[in-house]
Structure formats: structure tokens, C-alpha cells
Amino acid sequence: MYGPILAGEKISLQPPEASEAERYVVWLRDPEVTRFVSSFTDVTIESEREFLKNIAEDATKVFWSVYTKDGKHIGSTDLHGLALNHKRTSWGVMIGDKSEWNKGYGADVLRTLADYAFGKLKLNRFELEVFDRNAAGIACYRKCGFKTEGVKRKCFVKNGQVHDSILMALTDDDYEELKKNNDDKKSRTC
Ligand SMILES: CC(C)(COP(=O)(O)OP(=O)(O)OC[C@H]1O[C@@H](n2cnc3c(N)ncnc32)[C@H](O)[C@@H]1OP(=O)(O)O)[C@@H](O)C(=O)NCCC(=O)NCCS
View (cartoon, rainbow, N blue to C red):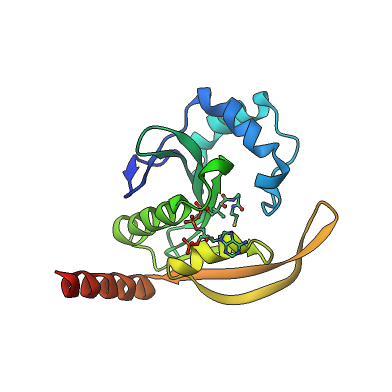
């Protein structure tokens, strides 16, 4: 399904539009963007249009396009494996526009979706798996409070290279503690 419009500090999350398909294809065909992403191969404009249309009907996935506050489309994000009965979800993100890396957009997407997952959906757990060599991803998730829970050895093969997968997660308790620490810091600087 498409997610509702959500506003972060630096980004907004919006339902995708068919007109974005071409941009997604450029990003998904860029080996630098997808080198640590397990799922994408041989995307075409047609397959991407089809994907963006079909995902509206998929109840296990919530998909958003990521925009900067000044209206530039820079990527996508999704909750997948959403299990409301177990109050947990997995999370994925791609900042496809490489010129926008390392500006805090990935972290803001994460924080915005954590607010949504714990605040609105009342989940207990928010998790992801990341290739062990994805240093930017791991740094991004750590600075948002994600904790490493384990390593799945030799989990992915991408472009002939074998990668371990790092399992990282944030629980509702971690999230409450992070919020409390942030509030304490704010009140000390006032
Ligand atoms: C991973 C990704 C989402 C991060 O998004 P982003 O907007 O660049 O993230 P942020 O700017 O919030 O944080 C990135 C952090 O990584 C750090 N970083 C970047 N390259 C690094 C490296 N080689 N080693 C260590 N840290 C690195 C940055 O300095 C930054 O930390 P800081 O804010 O403390 O300085 C983005 O690079 C991306 O989409 N990549 C392509 C697809 C992908 O890998 N998706 C994730 C699959 S799990």
C-alpha cells in the first residue's frame, strides 16, 4: 500500500507517482547505488511502472517516495514484512540521488518512520538487515539508535562478492529512551 504523507525535519514522505518511474530506473541501474541492496536486477521503465502500481495493493508493504523539503525527489523507503499481530516491521531505504548522500536525509527518513511505526502503528520492533560493507548505512542506523543484534554470515552474494548481513533493530523501549534523552538535552540548553 502507499503510505500517508509524513513530514520529517528535512524530508517529506509521499505516495509514489507513475511519473517517478524513470528516475527510479536510473537509480536502480546505478551499480554504486545498488551495490549493497539485495533485491534489484534488470529494472525497466515498464517493470518499475508496474511495481509502483502494484504496490498500492500489497498489504504487507507500505511504500513512500522521499522528497526534500524543497520538493526534490531523492529516493524511496518502505516498511515490509509488516506483521501487525507481532507488532513488528522491517524497514528499507534508498537515497537514490548520490549527490544527496551524507546530508542527514537517511537518518531523517528513519526517525520519521520510527515516529510513525511506534507512535501511530504502536509497533514494538523496527528492524533491518544491512550488508556488512555498507559503512554509510551502518553509521546512519547507529546514530539513530539502532542496535546490532547479530550477524548472518555469508548471507548475500552480490556481483560475485559474498557479504555478511548485520541484523539491527530499534524497539519501542529504545525509542522512548532516545526521545527522553533528546528532551533532557533540549531542556538543558534552554
Ligand atoms: C545508506 C543510506 C540510506 C544513507 O543515507 P544518507 O542520507 O547518506 O545518511 P545520513 O547522511 O543520515 O548518514 C550517513 C552517515 O554515514 C557516514 N558515512 C558515510 N560514508 C561512510 C564510510 N565510508 N564510513 C563510515 N561512515 C560513513 C556519514 O558521515 C554519516 O554520518 P554522520 O552524519 O555522523 O556524519 C544511503 O547512502 C543510500 O541510500 N545508499 C544506497 C542504498 C542503500 O545502501 N540502502 C540501504 C540498504 S540497508
